[in-house]
Amino acid sequence: MTPHVRHPIWLPTAPAPGVTVFALLFFVETCARAILSTVVPLQAYDLLRDESTVSFVYTGVGLLAMVFSFSIPLLIRAMARRWVFTLGAILLVGAAVTLATVTIPGQVAGMLLRVMGTACLNVTVSLYILDHIEKHDYVKNDAARLGFSTIGWAIAPYGGVWLYDTHGPWAVFGLSAGASVVLVALFWYLRLSENTVLSAARRATPLPWQALRRFWDQPRLRLAWFIAFSRSAFWATFFIYGPILMVTGGLGREAGGLLVSIGNAMLITIFLTGGLARRHGIRRVSAVCFLGGAAFAAAAGVAGTDAPELCAAFLLGAALLVVPLDAVGGVPFYRAARPMERAAMTSVYRSYLDVSDLLPALVYGLLLLVFGLGAVFLALAGLLAVCGLLCLRHLHRRL
Image (cartoon, rainbow, N blue to C red; front, side):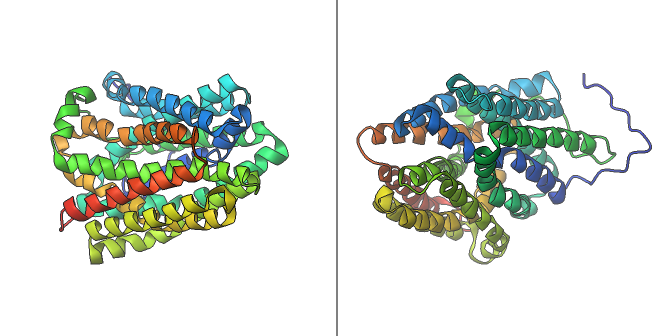
């Protein structure tokens, strides 16, 4: 049974559960994760000194994270959603502490805790969005929460590398842990209100593996998953292999942080996405963004470490085109998920995050045994092109 929470009369009423509230939660979570987005792969490369080994470590972490993700509905059954969210924030704190040890075991443990914490936060917040945001506001909600996080994603990746190099590991990892604590405090403040973001009705949650066949039997959900997977695979590749290429290309660690920060700064353009989607439709916008991103990613692969500045420019061009997908890429799932299946379907759907860390890293690790870093971006270009063609052919014209 969920413990009763008293409402002290001196506390002000928290914001009503709407677009702004979710954007605020997402912003604070961004601050906790973004500051480590460049530091984690660069520290892994420093410790392991081999791009292929880094890929295989990410593959192992992704596999374990995927197994954990499918257990999240069991956690939701065993405890209130708010406790699963709180667990996610605590895992982010644990990730920061273990990563700060700057050892190979601490690195692997920290990477795993980080993705496990992110999974808890992602699943619970997605369920709250489905409960409290109207269908016609899905694009507005995703654009708002990503737009709110632009400052964090634009500054934190470079700032994290700068802090790491000038003040040591504990400075950057301590800041990440502090932001996670703030996230928990804000979350529980929102719980202590009459119109709380956490007041979604408690329903029996089907196990995700029971819903797996049901999920894959629905073409709309399969396509929604592949769209999200392809978009996430781009950002995973950009965050991990972009900074590594800057280092191996001779431009240095701060160049890697700057690349990621500039790419994330392009999130500011996401406020234009709603108008584009209303005017041209999500189907056309998605297809153009995926195909254009594929062309830029292929050009980055050709440039490779021989021309790291040119490679960085092409990667930023790809990022500019992929950014709109962060606003519209989740809409096909929101529209396809049925209310009574949301909890289990959300857990199955969000597996795209784990698979996008697992499968591309495995493929890249094998490619890097034979080819240079440019092959990573050529493989990514192929994935984006396939997804663009599928969007053009199979996404509903009225979506």
